[in-house]
Length: 169
Image (cartoon, rainbow, N blue to C red; front, side, top):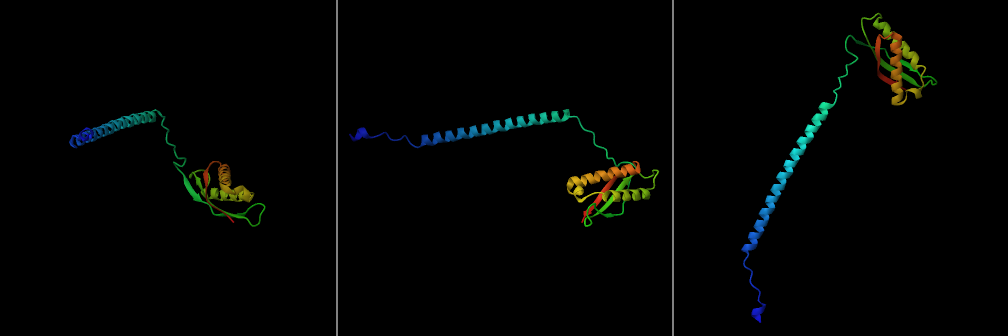
């Protein structure tokens, strides 16, 4: 009975080592093959996308570069500071420093342009309240109004009135 219960002895450890070595070799080859296929696919996709982007860029109409309005014969002259109080309050004071951009050689003397622009700015600021110049939109409206008034008063000789500082106290 002892002979009937005996199991056959394993044929050795050499075949199991050989099987696991084949398995690792196959796994390594498959890994290298998948890496090569993935890399090749990635290169094909990238080159295809680059071509599409280049074609779309070439198809877009190219915008002409904006020409600066300050080319040619222009000059800048600084105005004396304007200090005045605001409408409706004796305690709110404004100080503005500005410059004008103008075309020299015109019919008007630049010193006269500066004096007229300063006087007009002073008279306009006196009509404003503190609420009108508060915040970014108030400053933008003030700047636009002063520019428009300077252009109109000078009959186009002043191109722009540039606000340098605005202090409200």
